[in-house]
Length: 202
Image (cartoon, rainbow, N blue to C red; front, side):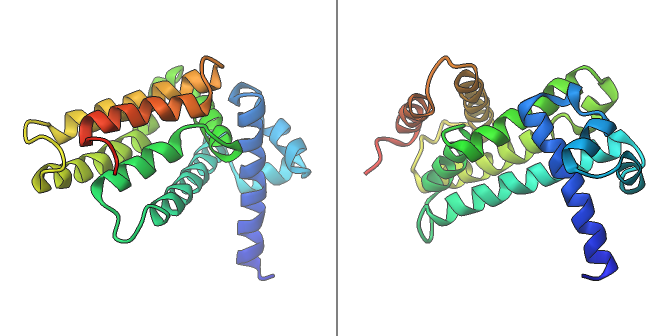
């Protein structure tokens, strides 16, 4: 293993330790010392690879985003080739819902980050809406294509509809994490709204 590869592996090891703490305990418990203990390394090593806690938090957040994007890519691949706008919208929104161990972990960890940035105006301004904006932009693009092909009503505003779908899925996800409904029930609610938007799936 060369030095560059070893450096990245250490960073990954430490960042993933922080993500595990965020998932199971919340980021209020993710001190540099706690991360070092979780990663099985010294505090000095954590401080060597990440000079500040904010740097560690942001590195781990980027890795979490990559994990979500990889999950989305798998679900999009499974949606057919080429996937229709409805299939893409369904795949992306469904994969976000906490219906299995991976998606529950991702959802809990994002919630921990969101809770953190809500209490830090500077972090909120810089990092509070990045993933949400990407999701809404992707959905709006698919909905525009669906409107142009006649798959949804010509009166539908793609951006507003995308924002509504994203907000609904976020709310459904929180209701699953909070025990109000199961992942399967949340998926049924999403399917109902997509059927209203696109018509029942064939």
